[in-house]
Length: 258
Image (cartoon, rainbow, N blue to C red):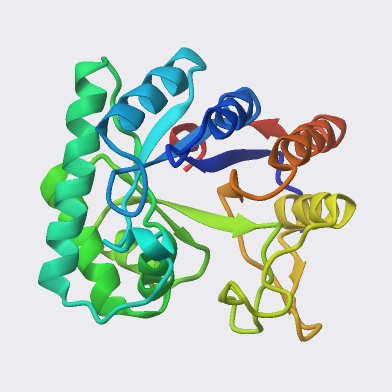
């Protein structure tokens, strides 16, 4: 198998609620290549959205929207019953808000990555995935749709003629069907830095990662997610960048790799 030599590293940001969290987000922006900005529904607000866009632009990062479900208590991670019409409006309103802020800052929005429960539902439910893809076409057909590799969301984006970026996770557990282990369950989140870095290298270079049952998955990804709200996120990002450099892997923006 041919080894891959380029990858985007994305991070979900714009969720900071304290000065220390803002500092973490600022440090992460020096280590990633694309950011997904919370759009004020599951987290964040207009002021934080503008701040995050400005900071990302300063670091020449690809700026994307990270729309989520309207449930701030669970940070958008609790699944709900959704209709396609509701999802379309949810995407149009949140992405539209960030798009307006970005345009006023001289920044073109490059991509959209659904957040939390919305991401997971769309990964397996083609109807919801189609609703998201439809909403993006109505906003800007040039937007890149970011979703779990080999998921219904990626299939929907491709079917609707959108550019897509398949995403992988080195710090999350996978089930045998390629879906992520739900948060709160054993093996859902990996904390050992060495293990996460090793998984990232395998995932990027040879498209190989082990599921929690020991089976082997072969997702082909364009972008690797780094969670900014996990402990030691900055040190993990630094370790990943060192590994990529040593392996001769170019780290570039999602709009250059998708």
